[in-house]
Amino acid sequence: MNARLKQKLGDLVILHEELMEDLPDMEEFMEKRLARRGIEKTIQLIADAMVDVAYMIISERGYARPADGRDAISVLEKEKVLSTKLAAKIKELISFRNLLVHRYGVVNEKQEFENISENHSDVLDFVREIKKR
Image (cartoon, rainbow, N blue to C red; front, side):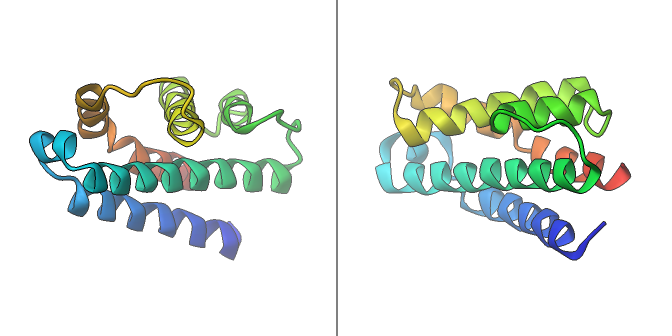
């Protein structure tokens, strides 16, 4: 594993730690726009770092060129770098990131909070699966 990839995986662990430190309770998340936007930015950075990792591995190993970030995760799934279950969850995270960045629709803050609270460990699972392969 090259130094850039190791650094990016380390960045993901740090971003996860920051997410957990900064994640307020549901009431504050829903009522305090600034707190929510900070968490949303962290989610964006996490998703972007995951896509960066995927592209690095694809380039390094000469896998098929992906069309976009979600497709990059699909390539890693096809090549058995990521499990099917985790790849599906990461693709959902990337779609959510796109929703946040491009404001394609209205975000339900309660569902957003619950999703982050329930699925934050996917970040560490991603790092573990990448390191194993």
